[in-house]
Image (cartoon, rainbow, N blue to C red):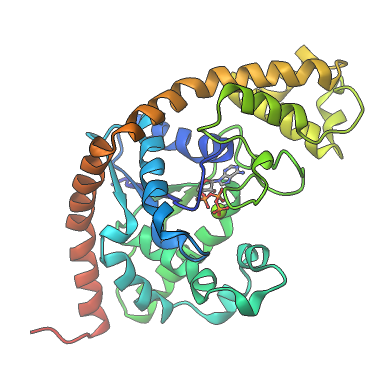
Length: 334
Ligand code: ATP
Ligand code: MG
């Protein structure tokens, strides 16, 4: 049977990349009728410093975004990662299955740790192992993510296969498929066409947040880095123009058009014409989501009810799996 699982880190403000690359995809999969498990990755968030006074609010904000984007708590199980203890337990066992060499190859760790690898948390290094636990605890078959998570998903597949093999339990963990789909699997930063849009980018102007108001969105798009040329008349003309390519891709994704159609409409025009059109489209596309997020966050009681019920349902699936794993590993039981 199909089982969909994904998560978003409670590491700051959600942005357009998360919306197009992840949230919208979750809703589409939910609407296909498969069970969907979506969690707020608070344990992943603390791999880099999070102010405890803000982490709770950030967790609620992600939950609000799930609901505001169209996830229905009657169909999707929405829960905070840390509220289901099995995640931490299985992650430890997987730390003993995964190989150092596998983690050494992870490019996200290299990017996030930057020049100060020795000062990074151990958690940041072993994060993809916790991610494998998140996924395999629910025996998920499909994991919708953005392009940046491809390598981590491959590691999850390796861990599943090695566990099944080492302990002689073929098929115990299904090997999950990454679902990297949709028109915007890698939205780039508005300040740097070579970097992906990220919650953890220190520049707020690098991203459009789901909670930005119309003026902020317009001003960020106006300031977005571009080259001086007008938009090309053909799609090939976007090659070697990463910033222009990104803005066209965002327009296409929001409008439900192909990039060719966007170029057909705006080719030959300068950014002075294209940027205001993009800003209007971004504002009108995000406004209903933003308004619903604000409404939900005004009184967190509804969010908290959803998260609590979700944590209980998730634990009902996860706890028996981790119990079985402990038995397979040979841990003592009364
Ligand atoms: P952080 O900078 O803290 O890692 P993030 O912006 O990368 O935050 P995550 O919580 O790590 O967000 O990722 C949540 C989901 O959003 C993942 O499926 C990820 O692949 C997707 N995603 C993140 N950034 C983008 C982007 N720029 N374009 C498309 N999808 C994205
Ligand atoms: Mg990320």
